[in-house]
Length: 377
Image 1 (cartoon, rainbow, N blue to C red):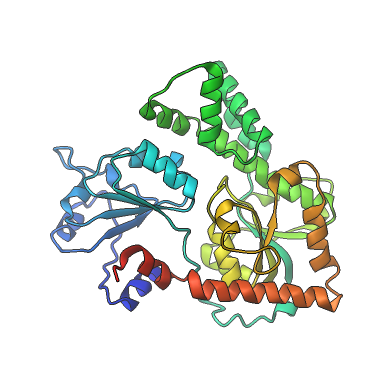
Image 2 (cartoon, helix red, strand yellow):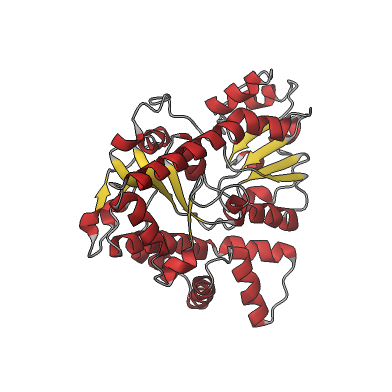
């Protein structure tokens, strides 16, 4: 929030930061009497708070409300379905944008803009030279063991469990499918016709399928790397539960805060990103790693392929190729990490890092994104 506030002040806006307390509504009501250009929240639960007449407190404001959602819309269904008078959404994926426009038509405007790059406050000058960075390949993110995700599926009633498993099979057979794509295929297979409201309700209710698939893909990529003898350093909740034949190649740093993750990027040569089901967008790991002069290695999306070029400012890999055991990613990482003693490989990796860093400075800092979203020239 501080980075966003700084960006607005740079563009001559006055900013009020407010921490909402549902047990003390009156201060929020008093704020609504002021004039604002916009009210902004992240992954908001504000729409559900109403007065005794059922009027959302957000409707007290004579300003548009922007909810910046950082996950698939299915996880925000209960908020998105509330018909606020002046509801706007910013999301991270073009498919998410289309989904919201289709299933929540009362929302006035939906824009796709991945979260801006955030500089580390502890290493703002990127003081660790690229060649002496301690982590060759880093992944920051939580780990959910597949048995944990499977238990969520197993706990469902038998008929629901059957549908969960059918949807999982559809998505495993085509990793490019979104949750809504898989649901659409499934209901057509059953010959069922659903209204838009029913469809969005079903997609939301079947969130365990999406949860399982995120765990499945993350587990698959890490096991692929270890199987091909690529060492990796990981940080985040749950990795102490990871077990594999090649576990010695995995170094666990423990859990981390968001600020810690930025420092870790500044200490890594290559940062791995594994999309949480985004097929046409980006994740903050991509932009944040680049800003800290760490080469981002990510599963490809149409959104990113329009902006970045393989081995110029990013390293792409294909999830279906990994699922099929293709060695392309293993060979790519081996070239830059295992054969880093070859000067041309190391120079190339440094060049990719610098190009990504420059691109972030020019395109994806908070000030640029705020200007694009909110400032009318």
